Length: 137
Image (cartoon, rainbow, N blue to C red; front, side, top):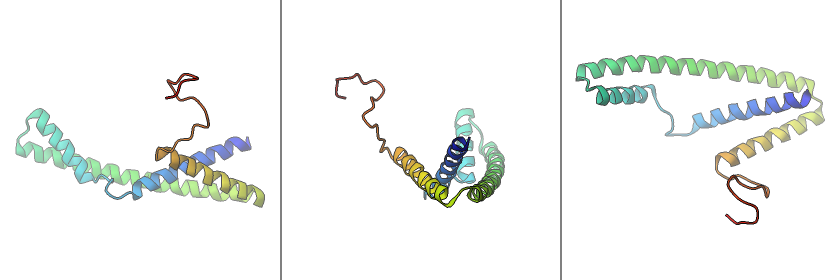
């Protein structure tokens, strides 16, 4: 049971860490204005909208995109607060030795995730999908 809890905590930590890193990358953030602009442009091209219609569609999409962004931010903050509370409770349960091991496991999981994300996968001699034993590929 403790191992399952530990694995669940590690995965939640890695997921939140990944979301935070994704949010920190410059140039990758899509603004509500850009979302609305793309949606309005796509509809204008597909439906042959007039300029007036395009403006109305843009305004409608912008309102929804801003609302979605606000809701997402609130959800993210709530999840981070819940995660922090869980971390504190877990730390209160663990012995100092277990805390050290737990931190080590989290660090390893984070690094493994980053390596996989960056394309540095390690296969430890395992076959990749589609390869046959005895043949190099």
